[in-house]
Amino acid sequence: MAVTYAELVDQLNLVIGESHDGRLDETAIVNQAGRYLVSMHPWRWRQRPSFTMDLVNGQSYLELPPDFNEGDEIVSVSMTDNLSYGVELTTQAEIDMLRANTILTPSFYYVAVSFPNQKDLTSPQARPRLELHPTPTSDSADALRLSYRGGWTELSLPSNRANIPETFDFALIQCIRAFGAYYITNSYTHVDALVKSESIMSLKKSSGGVQTNLGTMLGGIGRSTMGKSWNFTTAGPA
Picture 1 (cartoon, rainbow, N blue to C red):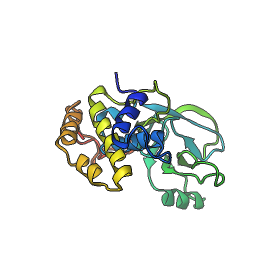
Picture 2: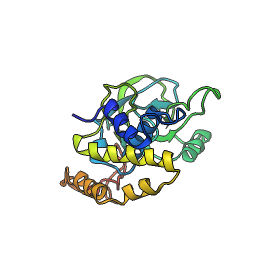
Picture 3: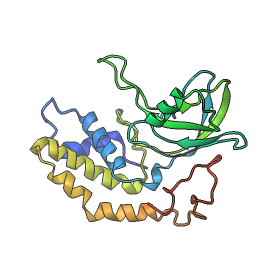
Picture 4: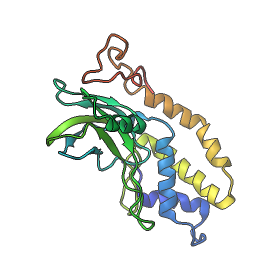
């Protein structure tokens, strides 16, 4: 099994000491290190099962998965029923332009990630969502399918386990120790050295080899965008 939060705190205290400065938050450091490890590379184990999203009458955005946060990555968005509409990933600026143009009648849904403002200064930033155009005129359950790479799952209780493969336990411990050293020395030396280490390079190679056969290459000028956008991100292993 993957390491627990209690075990990770023990590893952190080997660096910062059991009787460390009270201003050092063990939970914050452990989760900072975890987020750093996850964002370091598009690891294969970050690929989540597909998530379906509902179209809601009059709602100009889509709710992303409950575990989708900053650091996660959208791989693709498609319709579950490709007979009527397709989906295009685009930019917020493009969607704003399309929303302002009342003459066009799109045959696609256009989507783009946005990060709504916090409600007030005492609230955290709102969760990301997918801006949507055109705005649906009726409800449709499970209308779109999202493929994405998940991020770090926050740990806080002693029995919580890191949501990573066991083979990455050592890398996570390295990250936590490196972050602990930063808070003690105020130097990024250990963190920078970790990124370039042979152990991390080896994990990147093994992660990319989990599935070496990705099937026939998709995309290209001869492929229609109806129902499946051109996607040049799946040409080979990470």
